Length: 103
Image (cartoon, rainbow, N blue to C red):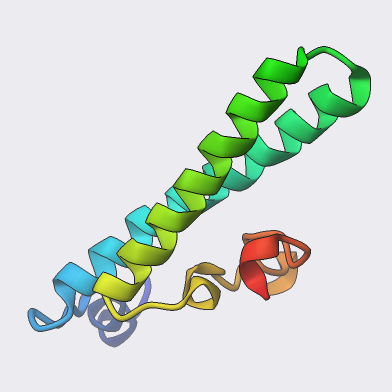
């Protein structure tokens, strides 16, 4: 069973004027998802006591720099961090609503 040709055409429709922005949005969404996962893992390791003070400092600085770069890239492409939070329908949104980047 295939989708009606009208539905398939709508899903495949692209706008040449926004293709760069759309691609940037997709890439930045993936990077933000990975950043949030890294942040959660780092917090888990800090809570567990697995890291030295120097490692905690280095991870904190790395995450702050990555956040700053994400903000710059979003601004360059006319995006807000909220634009990266894809709606997955009944599953909710892709990115964590409690992330410091969402507010």
